[in-house]
Length: 295
Image (cartoon, rainbow, N blue to C red):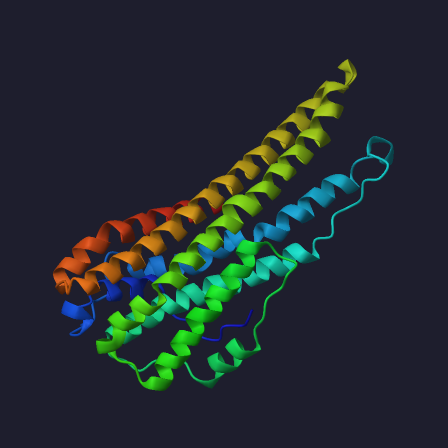
């Protein structure tokens, strides 16, 4: 894994990429339109809201554990070690950045601007490694992200321009498809399981005391019921966010596959833009959903 130094707008570049010309060889810039600048900022905020919570669910379960009387806990029960989840969240964030930087580079190449990737990326790629403590999907994501950044570093060294863009897309489609699906699985399956465990912890923490409440504790019971409902609602938001994250990854995979197909077909700029428009709109919706739920 590695630290990515370059910060650029993402979805603005996706739309620029959508304007690839015939054979990906006569590319032009598109003005930022339809609120895409705002969407780029939203994307930078939305995805970490989901991946960062991989460690958050562990911390919340520990709070419940620590506030449960010792007599009510199983004798062998212990608080969870959240450090592996914190590390996993950090790695996921970096892999997401790699994916975003890759799409940004496609947009930069389509405008015939030189890539700004150099020795820093080379050094980071060379220094990265795998961590066997994480799930197979997390390790796969890290390897695919490394592959993408290595490809960008090579493209920068070789002085790639827009005429080589179709070749770059073709060479990296397998890595993009694998990376997006690995990230999706970590969030929707692995993180989803953590959320299910958190829900079980919530039910255990609240339901027993609520069932044992005495008649003279009526007002206290009402407050506890409200807090329980609030905690359950917040948990459902996180589940919905995980589902939206999976949709974003599916859409990014579909976008790249469509760009690859249109390059092979030597499609016109107008046709490429028409083909990718529904996918870009779906991406906008999924990211907007995450943002709206965060408020």
